[in-house]
View 1: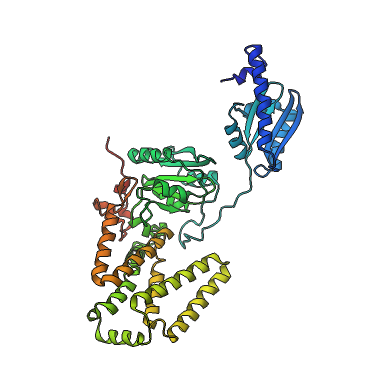
View 2 (view 1 turned 180 degrees about the vertical axis):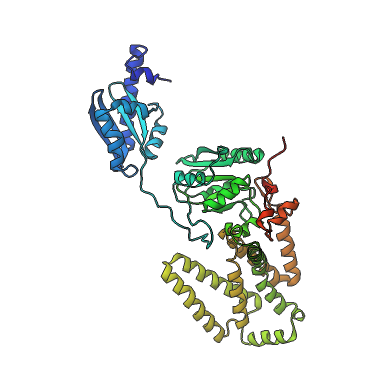
Amino acid sequence: MKYKLVRSMLGHPNNTADQNMTNTLGDASIKKLKEVANHVDDVLFKNIPTIEGVVTVIYSTSLVEKMTMQSMVFIPLANYINQIHQIGEPIKLANMKKIINTLNSGQTLLYFHETKTLLHIDTFSAPGRAITNTETESTVIGPQDAFTESLETNISLIRRRIKNPQLKNENRTIGTEVAVKITIMYMEDIVNKDYLNRLKKRLNEIHFPTFIDISELKQLIEDNPYSPFPQYYMTVRPDKIDHSLLDGRIIVLMDNSQAAIVCPSTFFEMFTTVEDYYNRWTTASLLRTLRFFGFFLTIIITPTYISAMTFHPEVLPYDLLVNLQKSRSKVPFSPLFEVLFIELIIEVLREAGSRLPTKVGQTIGIVGGIVIGTAAVQAGLFSNILIVLVATSALLSFLPPIFLMSNASRFVRYIFILSAGLLGLFGQMLAFAWLIAHLLRLQSLGTSYMAPVIPRKATDLMDSVIRFPIAFLKSKSGISKAQKK
């Protein structure tokens, strides 16, 4: 049932029946709202006398600062009540769910008892974290600011750099139980409309209670949620987002989440950083090559040790084989169990160090690694050469700038270890074939995850593992190229 709130505010209802129904609905809505807010001590109901009668002000003290309430609500109610009508927006009394969501989003509700109307004013002013540099994607060259948990702040950091009317952002809410605000940003003149429509369709099809962080949303819109590899690039750096927007990508931001999603993304982009474009092309190419081939080295070092010691000792030089046999002379386990055991110890140390306070975690990681490694070698549990190989493999796993890709390499490494323990080098080749086939099948927002190699675009190869001088990087990447009209 629709009620004409504007006429009610002017005091001219259609008829007496409508007026009575509005009065009953208004009182019932406020009563219901008080029942919902029972035992919620930070929600206040204040009756303020005004020239238009009593006005009930409803707001959450944890989401609105006192000075904001004083300047935007209480003073205008006492002296400039017309200002309240100008900035306030009416809300239907029958829509209790929207009323509660509006209150929980930090807005103030004003119920006019005389006209039985309900207005809401945006007074959200909860304390937030200041803009600081990032600890997870720190760089030496380039801007040092990073996103915060405020959606409005993050949008402003992007728009401060891209002053272009073609930069669009569309807001929407997701979550069936608790609504969460997200925004989609893109450059309208260069974005691929097919990708944009595909992303919107996936967002519309999501039926999930609520989202605490945008990484949860990312898993629901991926093409293959069962893959260990992240199919979208996530970053907290505004300069990286600006670079992606100007390349035609689509950005997804979420309120109360620091990171942003870049759609679509490629496998090669998981090994690049925005600092690569600030460095000389020689340095950037060297670092990219190190990260890219480091990913493959970390998944084959320890499996190759297992294969060589179990099935194929002839592949090793004689002197190295003798040293390995000497170091394993007191080890009672097979190479497979030896590697699995020490890999699990490394995982335990890594997990324990990340959960403890910073100073304690660093101490546990360093002292624990040295003490356990030395004691294990002296006790004859592990070979000293294997300690070096596992430590090198662990360090190589941290080379990718995207933490989710580091986790993927750790998971894939166990597949290679088991394959090597069962079938030796032949098992490793089978695992490698599976890995390449899986990567080739993966897609990001419906496009090839292995671009620019599949499909090949000559200009994209200038910004892949080898980064050409910046003067050559003028054209948009093939993965984000807009369709021809």
